[in-house]
Image (tube, rainbow, N blue to C red; front, side, top):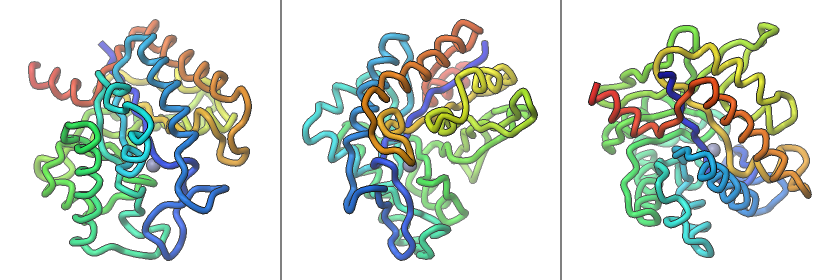
Length: 272
Ligand SMILES: [Zn+2]
């Protein structure tokens, strides 16, 4: 059985780092906004329900709080795995902002992220994905001390196998995938390029076709369903983009891939 996880980062719309501030900002907006992420999330959950797929959702803490103000988020996400993705989508390493947090500050940010998700959903997340995929030894140490079971931030080559591995002590890395497309160009399992119109579902099917060992982790952003990086929200975009994701997942399933949550993958591994 070839196993895959469909994962979604639920964070502020078109987020990007800004030098001099640890928190993330949104393009085309002075403060954080969540309209595209909410619209995209509802479309994704609806589509996954239709296909009988349970996903793993990495929630920014502030996104979870804001979305739950006018949405029964706990009910919407029932059956899916809830994991964490920072509180205010912080650049935890300072790579883009120039602000390198101390370990105490990191612990406070990651603690707040976990507490916000737990308070909205009533479950303690066991997984984490670092905003902007910025991870270093200090962040890893804090994730481990906070008792997280896994991180899913880094890339691994599909050709070498996609098995979870130990990052530090009991903390596992559940890597995203990268490989090459038919023309030999690099492709990554984030659906970013598909929503920016640079790739189609068949490119990702080709990547999935190279997967035979471990767990293929696909990744998406809920805001990206409703809004592109350069173009902003656009009439009719949601239906079109959700159609691409649906086509990809349906074709993957008909090629023999089974979708499970990352937590369920661990449970299945433990049972042997
Ligand atoms: Zn993010």
